View (tube, rainbow over the protein chains, first blue to last red):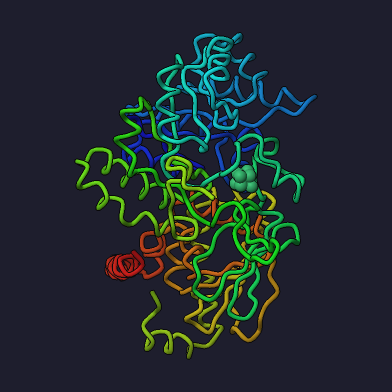
Length: 325
Length: 164
Ligand code: SF4
């Protein structure tokens, strides 16, 4: 299986290549991709250089253009697609069907991947995207079990990529409005969930309180591992209970299911984390590369350090194991 | 990993003006070698960032746009738009992008307050800059540049092992 690795900066891109990525995915410095964070992402020139560096090392570059176009401003997304193709991107990762239509009709030879943000998770939805736009690969939402993934793989006519490690988006991706409900911005349109501009942390005695747009999202006791103030991982007061309503602050790790995913017919494993630093990229990519190449019994040992990099310092296999509440 | 107590006590005894001179020189040298830092910072270069090592009695206020760094005693509590507090060696490792800032934050060894957009832009800008403090600052030691660099590299190696 291919290892698809994140890069938010050229430095992280080089780390990913060096650590053993088969392909690196990245985006431009604007709202055309779902990690539109301050100081992150690539200029056109940086992308050209990254693609060339990747090709020299036999590594592919995928460009994420995976937000939904704003009516009246489609040009921003069309130009981004033009520039990604011109830079030599090995694939563009798209969510908006109108952008898929633009790319497949303007650049019929350009390899097109469907982003997780498109939320295509059944045979009919995937078949439509393959037939209409010639999609070669589909990134599956993190809401399916391994048997469901295997069933899809048998019945669709394209490659499947699944998330293996990193931040966990627990809702039907591309459809979650929690962030826009509170901040007016969402990953789907502006490319950012729970934007940093709306985040505040404050010390309250020994506790650390995280806030989003003035709402308290969580309170961490002294030395309790912390997480981002995303609404889906907030602690809520419901009836007589205080607790996590949707999901705890936790990251995804499905490396235990590697063999099952391989025999299910999965083509590629994706690491989440374009917003993370190059040290994260280097460590996660090299650990997963070592685990992929190790025999089953030696695998766990290659991954021991990874929980320390995870949100809340814990990991879960999420829906892949279907043990959610 | 904290600075050894005797070392932090010694540094704390130094006059603010002396620390300011050394820090200012190091800051300008590092900026000269990494002018690309400002490109990623964008408008956030106009914010005031406070770095507060928890194992020292000094804090450092940085205003990237005017290429200004100022040293204060902790009690002075200078006003900043965004602040980061953690052990000195952790802050230096973050500056070099050798450890992942989010992971250190999750572990609670680091606290961040104030304008998170500015802080994130700074983190991403630093991460792409490839600072290498022993290499970048060695020339400040004049004829002792080489031993300075070697010793600094050994200290960094040990500190990073302590954080792993
Ligand atoms: S709130 Fe949670 S589920 Fe919704 S987009 Fe953000 S990370 Fe994903």
